[in-house]
Length: 253
Ligand code: PXP
Image (cartoon, rainbow, N blue to C red; front, side, top):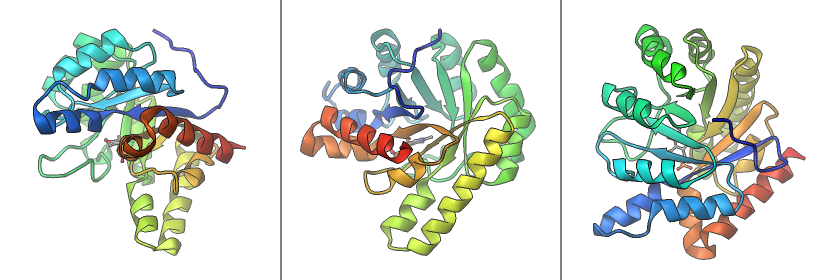
């Protein structure tokens, strides 16, 4: 299924709703409901919804994926590790996009990019049926050109560049190092686009650090979760998303 882009902007916003499920699961109750958050995000200008079904189901659960697939009318970007179980789930639900991420049980969030270069043959075989099922397959990687080249070689449609280090460096006051990381992200985006890959970016993005990333011309989509769900406590999810959208558009000029 093709989905129209909802905004006039050339930069899409994917809202990650994992941490709505984190809050729900903290009390073992039915609320807050991730589908309700997704529908509100949709009504507030999100171009897509991202949900990460982790192996340990610590936030999003299988029933959430089912509810999202049935309930939202913007594209679902299904994030998962490259395991056989997840492949079967993708083939059952056929989401618009699949973003492959590395996953370790002990990490708090997705800490590093996927090693596509080191696992090329397996990943090429892994994504082939996903592509045949019509999913846009994305690799969540660092800006390392070896990882970008390998993603193109195995037939991925998209790379999502990991902005976690950039955002951490800025938050820790290392402005110079953050600038260097930003320059590497820019170069990575340019390189990936030159190979025909669509470029996305995400992780750790906030109102304070989003603009330089949004200004990278090759970047077509940002995926943002934790900050927006946190900000929703203070201003509500709709206004939190609208403000992010405003800053993204401002950066885009
Ligand atoms: N993109 C990917 C591939 C991710 O794994 C995550 C975190 O789940 C995000 C984007 C969003 O990161 P954050 O929650 O820090 O905004």
